[in-house]
Structure formats: structure tokens, C-alpha cells
Amino acid sequence: MHNPAEAAPTGVPRPDNTRQQESDVTQPEAKARTEQLSNPFRPGNGVAPPYLAGRDPLLAEFERFLGEAHPPHANWTLTGIRGTGRTVLLGEFAGRGERSGWVCL
Image (cartoon, rainbow, N blue to C red; front, side):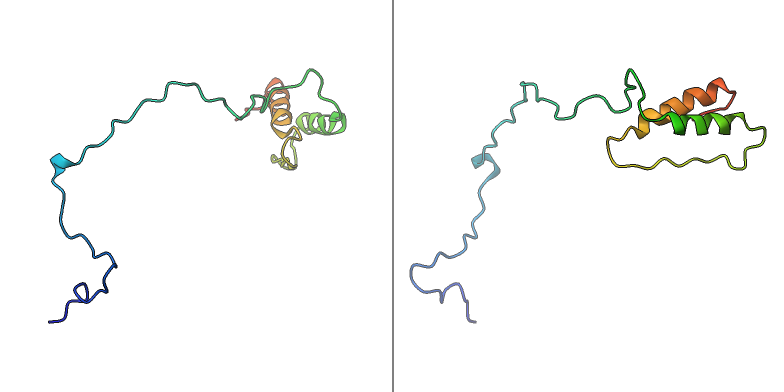
């Protein structure tokens, strides 16, 4: 039989087929992290500003929708890029809807 490991040229390491005993191997103990990591995210998502500027036409349209006896549709979709106030506006819609007797989830 031909063993390729035996035919390896001089100076080339051969695989070590010996196993270490478990008692020979020591594992370092894991250290618990004690320092406080800073949170890269800032709270503010959905926090209502002191004044909801530039939303008057949309809020007026929503109020008109709430005042209809039988609205033609019960769905609204808000779209916009990140940070444009969609969550704040939804909170405003929910408050106005609940004051008008709607159930808002």
C-alpha cells in the first residue's frame, strides 16, 4: 500500500494524528462583561413634537374622513422615508379617531 503522508518531502509537516487527553487541555474561564456599552440608538421614535408643523391639510382630511357617516373606505396608508414623522402622525390619527368613537389598534 502506498501512504502519501510517508512520501511527503523532507521539511513538509505531516498531519498530527495523536489526540490530546482532555485533562491536558485547559479552557480559559469566560469573563463577565462589567462595563456599560453605550446605546447607538437615540430615543425619539414616535415622540410627538411640541408642534406638528406642516400637517394641517392631512389632519383636516383625516378629520373630514372621521366625520363621514359611512366612509367610502376604512383604510389609510402612510408612506414616506425614514424620519418624516409617520409614527407621530399615526399617533395623532389614533388619538383623533378614538375621540371620534373609532377603535384604533
